[in-house]
Image (cartoon, rainbow, N blue to C red; front, side, top):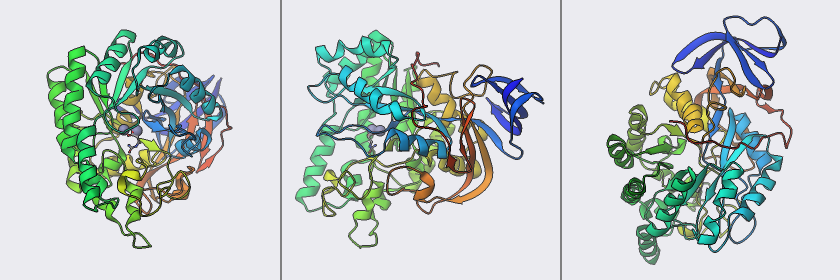
Length: 467
Ligand code: URP
Ligand code: ZN
Ligand code: ZN
């Protein structure tokens, strides 16, 4: 007798798309069979796809600022948003501030996540690889942290090559993955100063200040240094094919480099940052401001081509908890603020699966198994969460999404169920939407209603990345 049977759906099992029933016991998948009779609870999935719950390994949730306070997206609201969009596991970031240590931040991050409903882990950001800070890495590893995050740009976070090499060496010593934000800090600073001196301060100049070559150079350098040390890396948020080509070349010569992209790089463009908005000020463009910057419609097709080639094998949201209005939002320095004084990052936790399914599967750019690998299996593998997460297999956590492939929805901010006051995807028509989300055998979202209780999310101790 199973605790739960999901009957009549069509499941994605690796490369196979199969009509089958799924039996769940103790929160785990216990049977995958043509027919499962005996179960205490039955959920009908006729006409629906059954997919592994989404795994989003690049999120910023309730992340503290160096000046104090934290992003307004809380663990509770982020969990709600994730479940609304079919995601059941996330890996977020723990900061380190220049001159600061790691363990205090890690403990504080875990305490903030105590109200999470979603299963979660953390990447540890290294912004200052001092000897004292790096000596704390073994304690983080013992607690289940599986990865370090390095930024090659941003005033508060960026590492020079010496700092980046120190992170790579530490990761190699401790068997951790390194995720990298690749943009050239000095090049961006020079362009920013030049633009602002010329009076070019509007949000649209964010894209001008960081063109693809800035991302390509840093990506090539990060790969070369990782190759030198012999440390695997994953390049975060690749925005265009020009950058992905650097990665493809390295992969072809056997370098252990993985790469992700995000929905914004197949949907938004630099022109979105030039929207006048209702007040005609042009500040509306801040809603689309993220780094790397959104590129062009032609670049979207380039990103899809790189996904089909397998060069980009993960799609995450890079969900960032900044609202438009309010004291922590995009407009916190006023609507006339120069682009370098506007917080970077956009929300996307709930939109990730619908946007990628719609633009990818519904429009025929990718097939269903590739979609599942992009949004669930591959991120779980790289995060050391596979096969507990990211796959429908006997023994895996029963994290499932019942997916209505034909449902047409116009995205609104209310549907995102996050604590942010806007979505960059407002008004976008998508085909494909989650009907229900199941976390460890429990229905946590049904027809848009989130049913989970705060504090029920589990900490995910992570193992090594699985190829
Ligand atoms: O603009 C972005 N992507 N903000 C979030 C932080 C980061 O760079 O990933
Ligand atoms: Zn980044
Ligand atoms: Zn990010």
